[in-house]
Length: 221
Image 1 (cartoon, rainbow, N blue to C red):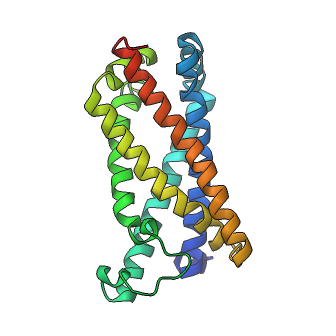
Image 2 (cartoon, rainbow, N blue to C red; image 1 turned 120 degrees about the vertical axis):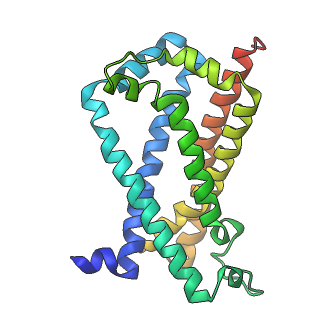
């Protein structure tokens, strides 16, 4: 059992499974958020549903999955850097088919993703779920969307964050399946296309929600 957590293959499988789990969460999260475009009442109801104890109990599970993914990502990345004799060794003239800008900069993208997550938690989670856990009252989600995305600079930071996640996931999607056995040439090409389509839909939904919230908060729509 210990080899599963310490072997190179085991680490990749664990990171891949946790990554796919987080992608499923993003699909759900985007679907819930995008309701804010169509109806404030529906968005409020969605947030009320997410605050139910039976749903809130999933938050620690999600947090654990995210921590596991980050820990194993850094372990594998540092191991790869050492194996190549330094970070600059990634810039080799003959690149493998799986090589890409995202794959060579996953640690940088990962750091941006984590920093963006901290920003997001301070804007929403802290004023909603955490506030309720501390015995207070959750902020109104529609007002929170307006106050957050009404600021053009915050909106731009979120869009940069979404772009970083896009690059991270377009590589991570096919890489996750490759790590669990789907590594032949045919499926590699298919998974790259499928990953781009799915990730673009997810992050496009988040970006659309943020942009619409900015426009609405500033009376443009």
